[in-house]
Length: 114
Image (cartoon, rainbow, N blue to C red; front, side):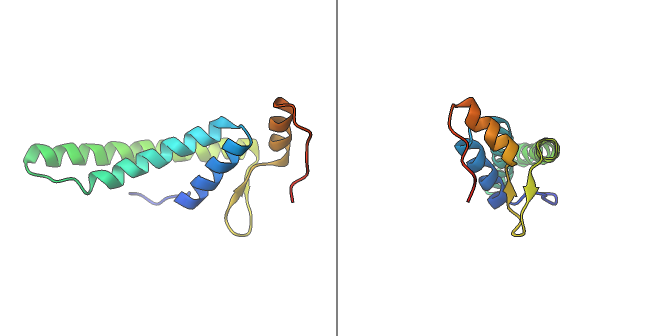
């Protein structure tokens, strides 16, 4: 698969923050991206007993690489628009303003992050 902007650990971290903070859009994009990557890797382990099998797997490989690239570009753009930034360890953090909006949406008092 082509060069990846996000590691799987980074995607997991973004998904976790989205689930905890009730912010579904980045979470759903990261889930779709993870699934496309998984399918791409999975199809490489399939048996190929015929020319048709090989064509099927090449098709899956090509399509999942395209889809993953599109989803990754979309996630980069969404995170830039929302103001996500990577910390020194390379982990992305949901912006405080978005955390506050999510907490207000579920009627929780805003508590500062540790």
